[in-house]
Amino acid sequence: MKTRIPLAHQLLALQVGIILLSALMGAVAAIWQASDQLNHQYEQRSLAIAESVASGSTVQQALLAGDPNGVIQESAEAVRRSTGASFVVVTDRQGIRYSHPNPALIGKPVDESPATVLAGNSWVGIQRGTLGLSARGKAPIFVNGQVIGMVSVGFLVDQVWQ
Image 1: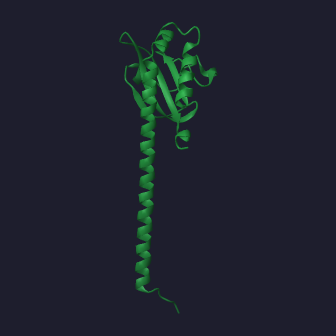
Image 2 (image 1 turned 90 degrees about the horizontal axis):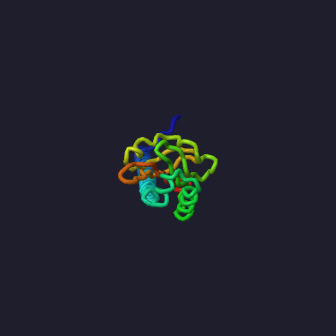
Image 3 (image 1 turned 60 degrees about the horizontal axis):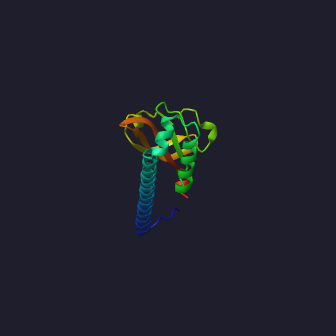
């Protein structure tokens, strides 16, 4: 003979299930929103640093001169260390790196297209590069109204969540 679960118990189980499902959905939504906010904050922080570096006369003049003394790498690394950024990369109009945390990549082109920034527009977002997935801010380097290069600053997503 088959025993039947009383209707009251069935309704209670259904209510508990609905409450648990609602709580789970709320937790997922809260985590997603927190992640989105954190990424946005780091994108804006990256952009502020990139704009600061791009407006500096030391980097501008060194880039115009072809950086014969490695001033750009030295300056970018100092900014990276002082801000906690994962990278500060300066490129010319062709996207050739003048700075990178991995010195072996200096003189090589960036992986992603710099077209938006080289058109004079700042950019923020999440991208994957040589160091991994990062929240980035990119700013054009202007001299006398002309774009001569760009600065890309990023914080690795893994470090953002620590």
